[in-house]
Amino acid sequence: MDTTFDITKIDEDRLAQPSTYNQLKAIATKFSKLKSGKVNWQRQKRILATLYGLQKEGKLSFQQAHLMLSKSKTLPKVYEDMIILYLETHDA
Image (cartoon, rainbow, N blue to C red; front, top):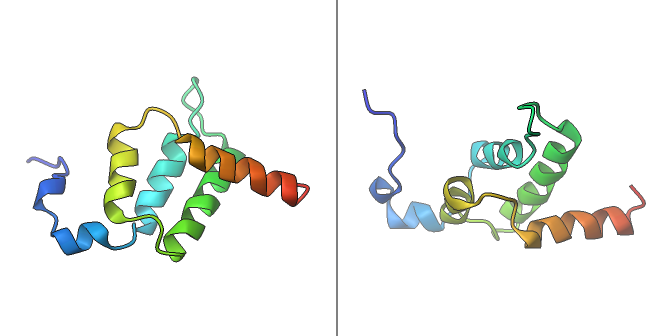
């Protein structure tokens, strides 16, 4: 049984639609894992909140999320900067 996800089988209209919540959770978890394999839950929640806000504004597509999951080794700097800016402006 082949369970590999094939993005080429997804309809073009769907690729342009907003990412799914499960994609966001997967991205946040991927970029929150420590070398020990454990998850830094504070970082995971911050990434998830940032991406969820972008998704709700229609600024993070299904395809963009897929590329982050499949190609990126680290969280892109633009999202890191958004988290830092939020923390600085909200005294968190």
